[in-house]
Amino acid sequence: MKRWLMEILVCPRSDCRSELHLEVYGAHSVEAEEKTVEEIDEALITCPKCGRWYPVIEGIPCMLPDDLRMDGRQRREENAFLERWKERIPADILKNGVPFGLKSEA
Image (cartoon, rainbow, N blue to C red; front, side, top):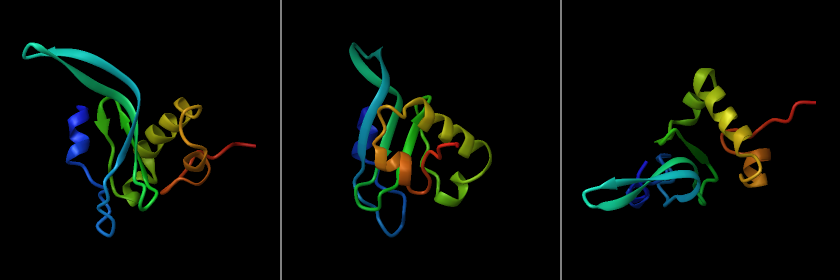
């Protein structure tokens, strides 16, 4: 994902549409048209208004509606993302993230 994409992305919730915040966890540089461009590989996109979070996994921002994030492969990928970056992800997202957080297993 290119960093400039954050200039045009807004929260996908129809009742929100707020500007988003980006925290980059992994990136690399690419030479393009005689300049260096940052490619974001892993990051956390958060909405300060509605409290939702969206991961960037393998350079792809995963900004699906809540109901499509709750089951199956998408949920497994996002849980793996939370687990992989749990030392850097804010505690409120890990505990009470919207639409879900990282559930600790007893």
